[in-house]
Length: 77
Length: 135
Image (cartoon, rainbow over all chains, first blue to last red; front, side, top):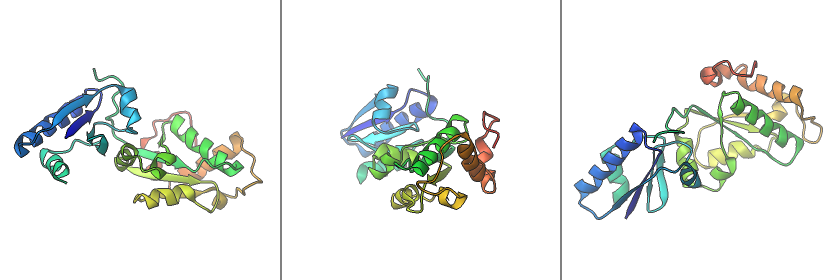
């Protein structure tokens, strides 16, 4: 599983990254967590509001900082 | 580096049908003027129709969605509703603009803006910071 945090690096992006890392750790799954900070690449995803979260290349949230538990639910879907 | 951060409050998103007719053009130019004046953020209706996940999720972040349609077919309103969004819709036909008989100029654009920001404009004006629009 590949999880990407889309955002240019503001505190909200960092918080979402931390929440994603915590979710992966609690679920004890193998997942690669990456950051997409290039604004052009972010817009290529169609994202206009950050931070955004993508799982295996599909954007699942934008413009909000999902909690650890919300991310866990998305991962388990 | 957090330059060009896109994490500010989403505010109001505006979508226009931007259709091929004169009223489609008018809807587009009115939406663009609202965006230029900081009254709303213009967003891509085609992206909603195509169900681009990033655009759908970004649109969910908006405080309010406005659709401007040029004619009673209401493609913009219906596209957004089809995607599950609640929308405040305006139709240029209701403002007296008829397809094939509408002149697109500053006067007609300002008339559309005054209709949108007047009456139901309380919410629309929430994000206005006294920009270039006097409507």
